[in-house]
Length: 261
Image (cartoon, rainbow, N blue to C red; front, top):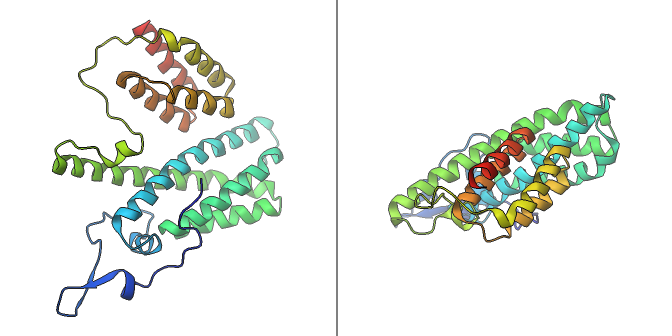
């Protein structure tokens, strides 16, 4: 994904991130933005336009983008582990370097300086074709990026709950980005007969651990007019795929089919 604030210079706090209270005394903007471990939110807000709403939207895009890339990184490591060579697979080097470079810039933009520095080291190693360094350091980077994704998701969900309480059920921020809440009024049994072929294709892709095929089938399913209960299960499967819990995802599909077959 392209980053809308790539290359944007940080705005100076005294001119862009402060306002006066009428007496000339500067007052900080966006003081209600929740702290997020691993992020300098003040810097991130300044780098993304100076408002908490703009920053929140960028964080949501970052989380979604990072989740997709994490899935690929874990698969790359899995292949390296199975190869028995003790180094990163050369065939994935270009893809990794390109994606790490994007995450380096994005991390700096949102105020994740330490994560950006880690990405810079991996990017340099990729350009130098230092496969052993990447194989040794990529697991730590994956762990740190995963922690940040979890922290960002937690902050966004907290804000969503606050918005729901204030708005009395109007469309939430997370719903705008595709995270749908389950429909408590839905029937216990859902007709999935017309999607059985697609779910079987997904099971085959999961069994072979073919990441590209998994993504393709998930995208195909997400384009279908699924009801709320199936979408809830799809979110669970997506989370399992993200954590490379392929066996769990297969079991989730089997349970869905057996329950609604």
